[in-house]
Amino acid sequence: MDKLYIEKVLAGDLYAFKYFLEAYKDMAYSVAISIVKQEHLAEEIVQDAFLICYQSLKSFKGESKFSTWLYRIVVNCSFGALRKVKNNIGEFDMEVHDVNFDESAFHILEKKEREHVVQEALLKLPANEALALRLFYLEEMSILEVREVTGWTETNIKTILHRGRKHLYVVLSKLMKGDYYGIAR
View: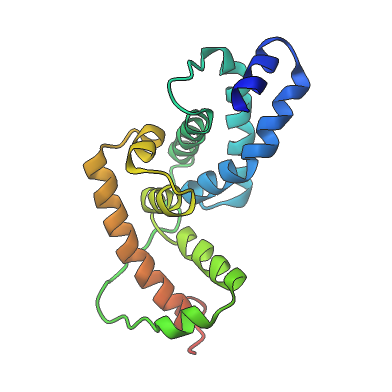
């Protein structure tokens, strides 16, 4: 389907690009927010990424899936925005010890609540870990696809995923206990 719309856009059909906006805007936003952690900035990045995508569509060679190519643009725009902002985006020291995770409490939550808690936890992780976890687990990309999107080595991806899972466990534990809000449950 992507190929058909790529051909339409390249043939001059400006409205055909709407297909890509509708199909990929949510994913692009989730990748951007994973990295920059700021809603307004993530929205700007998505707009910039789609503009770059539109302007560069003729250079898309089809060697990878269109979505992978677009994700790579979003990742590059996101990390570029971080370099421009040059501020600490709320990454924090996460100690892995002294945390008891009540798995039963997590499973009791309704599916939507669980999704919300996981999304909130991802926002508290370092950008590279949040991105790797989101692409691998939520977008269900393979290690090879994550490599194409991020440019990281397979070994680095596995290391980042390992660290990310450990940090996610810590953050989820604290969120479930209410420690992030000063509320003890």
